[in-house]
Image (cartoon, rainbow, N blue to C red; front, top):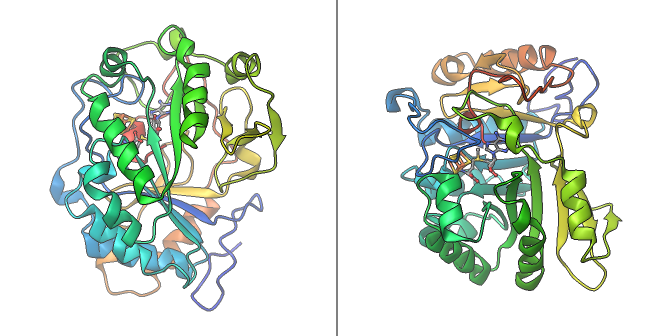
Length: 334
Ligand code: SAM
Ligand code: SF4
């Protein structure tokens, strides 16, 4: 195993033979929402001084692409809550066609209307927007601080700009399970895909995640009562398994880390806004890239990537009765 060099752009391969081609890059751990399954209400964010600068993030993306990474997703925290997020997107977008095949974004939608055009200009064509309910009060309950009207406005603006949109919905038993089938109907109407996500024990929260856990097989069964679901070979580089509906463009994606382990085909790593590279969503092990990014040894980053690949765990060991990690999902963006 070896990590790549710019002249050998195809060998980001871990010790289990998995090729790493996809990076989730967190622009910030901060967020305007406090989704109950994601973080605590009194979440403490990282000191701003520890966050990588725009230039450092763009340079890091360049080095990752030179090492064989072909897809980057900007995430957070809420990526669009970072001032200059679209400048970073533009800087990374300049790599499209030069080793980078796709730049995407996951957002909660609050600031999407303000930035949709700039994101398009940066070269982004697909956006995932997280929305767990279309009922304003329920949305407020789940996010503690979210404003559904702004999110819907952001989605409408992104649709008008031409983006392919996927709605991310964490399936929560007793909270939004009755909205799952209607959400898919709405996505079909709008021409969006829908990805359902099982709640994962990443970081401690005040609530018991197991009490709201919904296996996605149940969610799928509810949708199948209304629609003919046909297994699809569609892949977006992520862990979702897709179903299509004859006569409609919209697809249903299921991300089931608890009930359908997909670690054997894992192709990704995650980098926090401070430059910590996490090899697995379900583990705290990481290597810190920040000093290498700030130093003058041109090979330091390659060495750290090698170290990370050698330490990438085989799989997560999620168990809803305990948090698998000390960090929360907002550190690495899911
Ligand atoms: N703030 C942005 C957003 O919400 O889309 C990007 C970051 S957020 C951490 C990325 C995705 O992770 C969202 O779709 C969110 O619903 C999901 N997520 C957060 N915590 C989760 C958890 N504990 N289990 C499953 N999904 C989670
Ligand atoms: Fe913020 Fe996204 Fe976490 Fe919700 S899921 S609190 S929007 S980072």
